[in-house]
Amino acid sequence: MTEKVKIRLPVNRENPGDNEVVVGLNGRFYKIRRGVTVEVPRAVALILQQSEEQDAATLEMIEAIRDGKQHQG
Image (tube, rainbow, N blue to C red; front, top):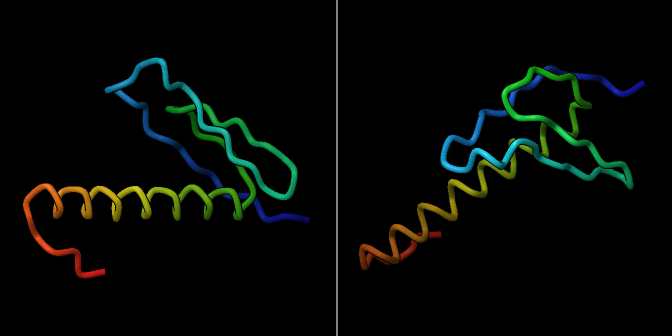
């Protein structure tokens, strides 16, 4: 059996119409509503965590380029 974990995705205040996130894993799709605590397989939570980390890294790179700094990747 797949281990489940509880997660809660923050509400996107900048885009109120962005009410849910869809995550695909092994041919299954999970529609996760923002602002609601739900149980998902641990692998789905990991996908969301890695996506958030990648978004943060991308934002840092964009800001560095905008500020004229060299990316130290």
